[in-house]
Amino acid sequence: MNMVEIIGKKKLGQVLTHEEIDYFVQGAATGTIPDYQLAAMLMAIRLNGMTAEETTYLTLSMTRSGDVADLSAIPGVKVDKHSTGGVGDTTTLVLAPLVAACGIPVAKMSGRGLGHTGGTLDKLESIPGMSVEIAEDAFIRQVQTIGGAIIGQTGTLAPADKTLYALRDVTSTVDSLPLIASSIMSKKLASGADAIVLDVKTGSGAIMHTLEGSIDLAKAMVDIGTLADKPVVAIVTGMEQPLGTHVGNALEVKDAIDVLSGRTAGALKEVSLLLGSHMLVLAGRVKTTTEGKALLEEAIRSGAGLQKLREIIAAQGGDPNVCNDLSLLPQAKVVKAYSWDAEGYVEDMDTTAIGLAAQALGAGRMKKSDVLDYSVGLVLHARIGDKVEQGTPLVTVYAKDEAAADTAAAKVRQVIKLSPVPVQQPPLWYAIVTKDGVQRFDR
Image (cartoon, rainbow, N blue to C red; front, side):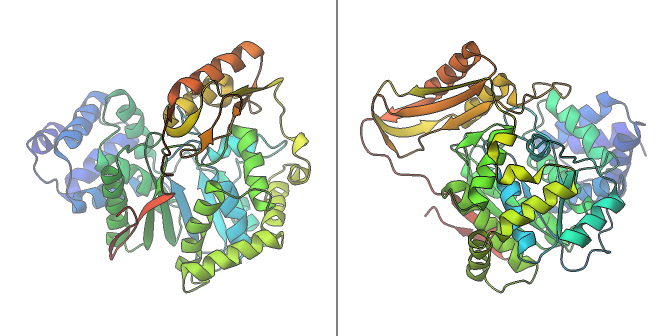
């Protein structure tokens, strides 16, 4: 096999064989192919794309480049959920305990945040004592015992993706649909789940800013699952604004606890219920999403979901009392509220910029080695379509000092646009994609 010939073939838009894809992927995993050739290959894929079969085989090859988790010791259908990333996206912390409380095992491997998006593991680690680094045997025992666990992915999970992802970030090939789809799905398949629900974001805070691009990504990942004989449902949801009102690690834990306790309604709850209802259908717990939603809502009303979160936190060394006493979460030194200096209707906001404002406070990483401040972040008091008046609340900033709070508030004020006339609220979700096709809700 000759890597130069493989690059040349894809440069001309030709279809690669399974053997050629395997050679490329194994070279990325083992370091036997130099970075400059891997980078050239990534750019050739970015410019010329891949067929559905190529993309599927790239995914399967990346999955096999490392360990594949064996969850067969856990009884029942294991359904995983993955989000393509956003701001204030705390659905895992709501969904995992809720679905587990409905009797479906949740063996969840999650990631950390980088850039404007938050990471589930970082949010969990804001809970005092909470550990997300658990050996696979202990992980399986925990799911067997209490029905749920959320841990970090092992370093041997899809190692080819780790190499290629780092190169994509510095070679302007992040926005390649086959590379995005194979990156996400290789890790999901390696995580050992029996079925997968995907939350594909669209809008200013998403990896795909346009609806058509987001639907195309959803279709590509569902196609991969179908060809890999794995049931996959993808739901395209809005990221024109933060999903929850809270942005920042401890703040998002609070937001999730508020939803599970029944104190908070709104977008975070509704999207969580939609995703969770599809998880219950794929697991065979219910026949319809309507039944699934009712079951999840009952788990909130009865307190079973919040109790399951307590159990997961305690099993992983954390303090479950945070579910009753939110003051046990990290507290910011400065909490400062800011008001609107104009009036109108919220028309638009740059969600990525809001995420970056929280990152600059210390809630996110600019590079992987950065140490997070779990206490800092933002709470937004208006959503698109809301009417606001001068002097009404805009944002509350949680910061290390007043100067940082003022800077963050100024950034938020700059990226939210007002209209003098009423504005329609955007839908929470736009499409559901299955192997049978696309059901759209925006028409």
